[in-house]
Length: 296
Image (cartoon, rainbow, N blue to C red; front, side, top):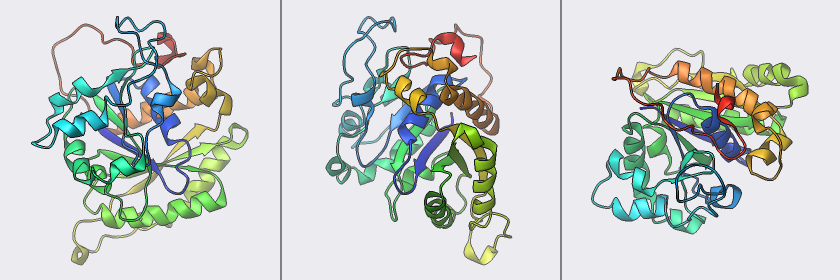
């Protein structure tokens, strides 16, 4: 199925929050995978589902040793999509996650993993994978994973400095990913000027390399196109709800409402799932605080 790689440039604003929010409302079976080389945050943010698997209650902390680390230890002789499930964990509410590394030092021994991992994610039918790639720097080994994605989605806030950094990153990525997946941009926008912020980022990014230029055959495969997809609401209270720090109805938050629109748009841009015989409905892929009806 589809692999969507979420990332950002300087500061990685809200990538993990965006990945979990999109996973919460994703209209198809989904796995959220932490691939941030600086270290993952999910073990500190969200509780695990209880061992009974009923999705209710607090099962305690996620296990930081079960996830990308344990998967890497078994993948030295090859990595198949069917190996991934045994290293995943489930959050309270039903969202499946692959917990990332705990610090940047561990990433130094795992540079070989990203290409095989991207191919395994892309073959994980019938599950889509949303990969939280954190901050992308120059020469990142995560480029090998990005090449396997169906779409690379970059996040930015609508500030001059962050959009300027993003524009430079887009220019570099379109060169590194020639012949590769399209690049989308999501704006973390203030709800008070949501449309204006998205439109302004679209205007600035329009000049990035790879957009609106005729490909030069002498340079090899064409650079991927770049599209500003829309925005996610910059909603601190919604982000706190998603982290389990507040009570209330998370499904009514501006963050989740905007994530639902983005998720529907992204799925519409991806290849449809292969036809299959009818099956029993899957359990809701929803983290703590988001009731099932919030996904419809």
